[in-house]
Every structure is written in C-alpha cells, then in structure tokens.
Image: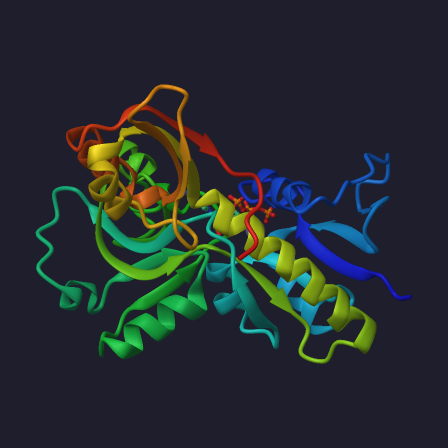
Length: 285
Ligand code: ATP
Ligand code: ZN
C-alpha cells in the first residue's frame, strides 16, 4: 500500500502545533536523524519537513499528497491544492499598518503610497478590490522596519498580538485576510491515498471536537435536578447517577469550551456542587 505523504513546516510557528496534531491523532513520528523526512511506526504516513512557502507547490506537484500550511501562504502562492480542513491553530491576520502618527481615515490613504510586504499577490488583490493605486515593494523579511527606514509609507504583514507593530511605531489600520492553518490536498489522489486521508481526517475531526469540549461532573440536589439538566447540553442527554447520600445525584455531561464560564455560573446558582471539569482526549460522535 502506498503511504500518505504529508508536508509540514520544518521549523517555525506551525511546527509544534502540526506535530502535536499528528501525535494527538495517534501518529508517532520516528525521531530520525534525517531532518527532511521521517516515517511513522503505526500509520502508513511519511512526513516531509519543508519551508512553509514551498508546501503548496509540493502538494500541487504531488511530491506530497497533503500538507499543513497557513491560508495566507496558500492564497499568496495560488497553487492547485484544495483545502480539506481548517485546523484551528496558527491564527493570525494579514494587516495593513501605517506609522502611529499618521492620520488614517480609510483605504484612500494608500493612494500613491509605497507599501512594503512579503505578500505581493494578496496586496495587489486587496488594492484592486478597493480601487486603490499604490506601489508594492516586495521584500523578503523584517517588513515592519520598512517605514522607519524610509523604505515605505505602509506595510502589509502578519499580525497576531500587534506587539511587533507597536514596538516599531506602527498601527494596524486594515485587515486584508484572516488566516489559520489548514490541511490541503493534491487534487488527484490515488485510491490508497484517498482512503488514508479519510482515515486521517476522521481522527483530526475527533481531536478538534475534543479540544473544544470539556467533560463536566457535578453533584445536584434531586429537587433541582431538572433545572440543572436543562442547563447542560450533553452529547445526547446527561448521565444521572444516584449518590450514596440520599437526595443527591451525580450528573455527567459535556460542555462547549465557549459556553463554559457562563454555564458554570448558572449551574452554581441552581445549587450544583463539587463541579469537576476535565479535558477530553478524543471525541467521536
Ligand atoms: P519558513 O522558514 O518555513 O519559511 P516563516 O518565517 O515563513 O518560516 P513563520 O514565521 O514560522 O514562517 O510563520 C509560519 C506561519 O505561521 C505563517 O505563514 C502564518 O500562517 C502563521 N502565523 C501565525 N501567527 C503568526 C504571526 N504572529 N506572525 C507570523 N506568522 C504567523
Ligand atoms: Zn515562510
């Protein structure tokens, strides 16, 4: 059987989360000395470690069947590769930033200006969409220093917290693209690869669901059981078990991470006690 070849970033911001995702999917990487490529003991997968910029091309050319890359890179490179799944990490935005003292009132500001970026394609599309004519100055790194040294009037770069911009005297004024890491695939996979990808995707989805969900256990006075159960969504409906102590029950359920604090407060108000919240490793519905 042919192995499923996956390309991931060899080092950088996507590396740790990509490797963690594989591990959480039960795929053990061999820590070989060969830094370009490694295999797995327990899944027919071969892992290639590459620069993120090269991953879309490798997937288009079927050197790798699938890859993990930021949407920003995928759209910039404009290669033939399909997104199969959003992975929920590597979140950032591609933003326009200008000097903090500039008076910025809208995209017209950029008319006739010089914009430094490592994303010329995405910037060109953004300018066209907004009917702005500006000069794009492509540079390969340290974009944030360009305005300070007089190389550009504005920049378009990746931002997560904004602290790099702040340190360089810049302010974020427009979002060009919101991005996260995605799993991409070659458009024409063989039958073996297709089957392995389905298997891998099934695991990824179980891991993603589990990451967003917590398991909750609590004790409830029987007279308020109905009210408490009403607050818990559960996979089907919560499990209720009698406690040794008369008049009390133990209630087990699952909660979405986002609703978590809100629901906990309401549970307490409804008389729930001994609330335990534990992480879930995998979740298959
Ligand atoms: P490579 O050596 O692989 O070319 P790189 O320097 O281009 O690495 P990194 O800085 O490691 O890339 O970023 C990889 C990806 O991580 C980005 O393309 C983007 O999708 C994502 N990312 C998430 N947050 C940020 C951020 N604050 N700044 C830059 N990239 C981010
Ligand atoms: Zn890169």
